[in-house]
Amino acid sequence: KVSLKFLARPSQLSSVDLSLFSQGFEQSHPPLLVQPISSLLASRFFFSDTFSSFSLFVMLALSVDTWLSSLNPLMWAGLGTGLTMGLSVVGAAWGIFLTGSSLLGAGVRVPRIRSKNLISVIFCEAVAIYGIIMAIIFQGKFSEPQGNTYITANYYSGYAIFFAGLTVGFANLFCGICVGLIGSSCALSDAANEELFVKILVIEIFGSALGLFGVIIGIVMVASAGFH
Image 1 (cartoon, rainbow, N blue to C red):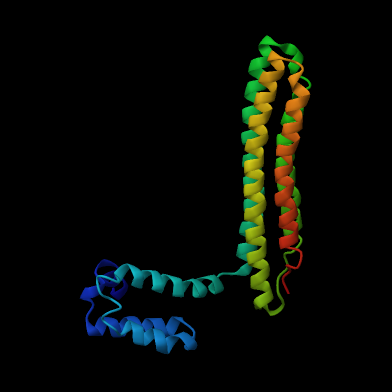
Image 2: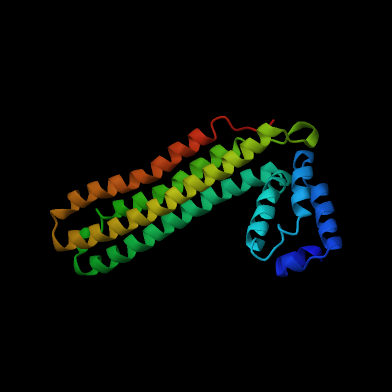
């Protein structure tokens, strides 16, 4: 109830409301933060209309540490693994959609481009393979800690796998889109002028390398990760 009043109109909190709010803060935060923050909470200036938005920002920032430490680190690792695979597949599917539609459309008028332009589809599919490889590497880091307790190293591992998953996933997502667009242009250009195929293929190879950058960084990020 006090939290709702605080969000609605901080300046209208009574002394009893402020006291209850401070008590709730003391029960959910480390002792080193309790005394200085509790005194700040007791100040009417902190809940004034002018500083209401700032007050809300401070309270949310102070709650982040409690929220992060209360979640199971294996959940973060699982999310990272899932995002790696999911985003990579989305990038590959998007690239194949772009390349395949242009290839089939142009292949109706110029049948000779159908075979050699399949290499663009292979480049797009390689993006999903990057995601599978990284998901397997991340899964190899999973293990149930002894005694069902988590230490600092376990939280580090969970966060490392999660953000490595985001890095690899988004790198592969944009890589797939990039390769798909270039492959689509390659098919259309090859249909118009056969001499352009090799030149545009070189550009496509460089575009495909973007996914490898994400894979390399992801491997480096989880090199020292592991649950103990």
